[in-house]
Length: 223
Image: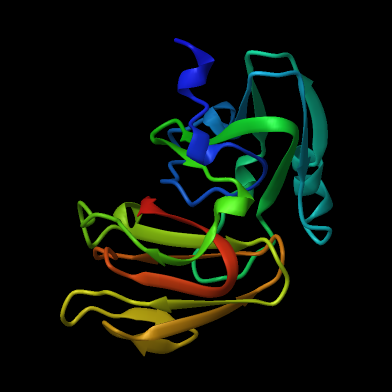
């Protein structure tokens, strides 16, 4: 298959923000070698690729992220980072990765855990927006957190204020910082560059709106 197929014009760029949502964890059934967070870069030209993370990220985790690699023309280069870069629920973390390339590229993120594998086409930073409508699906089993629906976002600039206007089924709530939030409630999160936040819920989050004062990267789906 031609590489041109992967280089969709609307998703091409030179700078991206990537992060990895939480996956189902089955530590008794999954060996460490199958847990992988991967970033794949596709390029038609010879390209240098630089990955960088927050200066306050732990040294051990940062050592698996920060790097510069070169790739040949008409090629795909995949970089594997520690699966511990995955974000957690209801907490601000410094887990976003900035990917910068010397030539126009396309970027994909892949999240493997043996039992589950997820992937996404990553939009370049200059195409990120300040308003999103979330799409998830009804969890297979609302009593098991492994099936929760999720929405997560990352900032590319300091002093980014993000508002989530929740869309929940009647009677359902989300608890954050000890408070119950109902359908139509707003949750405000303040982030700096490289910071991430993830919310999960045992119901469908479809219709939840994410707005921000500065562009953010937003991912959604189910665990």
